[in-house]
Amino acid sequence: MQPSAVASAPLKAAASRDSLLKPELDDQFGVRGRFEKIIRDAQDAICRAIEEVDGTPFHEDRWEREGGGGGISRVLQNGKVWEKAGVNVSVVYGTMPVEAYRAAAGRDLSGVDKDSRIPFFAAGISSVMHPHNPHAPTMHFNYRYFETEDWNGIPGQWWFGGGTDITPSYVVPEDMQHFHGTLRRVCDAHDPAFYPRFKKWCDDYFCIRHRGETRGLGGIFFDDLNDRPKDQLLDFARDALAAVTEAYVPIIVKHKDDAFTDKQREWQQIRRGRYVEFNLVYDRGTTFGLKTGGRTESILMSLPVTATWLYDYHPEAGTPEAELLDCTRNPRDWA
Image (cartoon, rainbow, N blue to C red; front, side, top):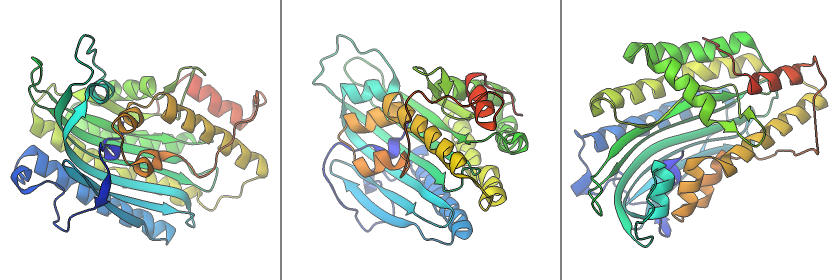
């Protein structure tokens, strides 16, 4: 899910004030204000780390949503290491249609007036990074906080969601152990039950069901999480974001200059096609953003610049390509 893509009205240049919240909602000591600070700080830190490796600056767009809030989209395209890398932040609020709420919450609202509008607040950070080199993996992360107010007899609700996952074209066990191990350490510091639960949730969610394979090699994912105090989940989201650079950047540095063949590049393009299929067919955040008339460039920032769909392609048995495919059909325990 990508709440950073949420909007429901035309966009214009963002206001100059630092917070994306209007003054009466700018509760710097409450969950809304603190979460905004966490995701804004994470956007700055992660973009700096990526720029240090790539040597190319991010392009920034600031936008404001009429009706409440806005966002900051940062995209690096055709860099030295990454073909496309984006880190988007949004803090939006107001009302949303029933269809958008259904997409965001995954809840059945049959019988509810389809023209109703639900008061909501959503803040999040979303990122996808697609490197040039087939041996360097794609990575995605997204962390969000969502609230609704009492509406139509339905009590107001709140929840956290998100996660971090990796999508390589080739299997390097030690890289996957590093990535998953980093995420496990963060999870274990908060609750030893988190990693096994969120790892399985990730494998189940990022499944391309019409192909019977996962989008990548997993990580952690959770949604609609409100089973403990807000402060505890806020701290977990903060620590998970702080671990993104440690989990991902060393793998990129290791492989960004690896030699590769035309065949390996072709396989990367095929796997990117799978990435596109998942995001456009199954991802709740993409659906939510499009159903609310969101900012298209931010919603589709996750898509790669290039991808390929070869008809009825099957890798030869015993090849590295076949190994990756087997891992997507039979998820492994890496940590």
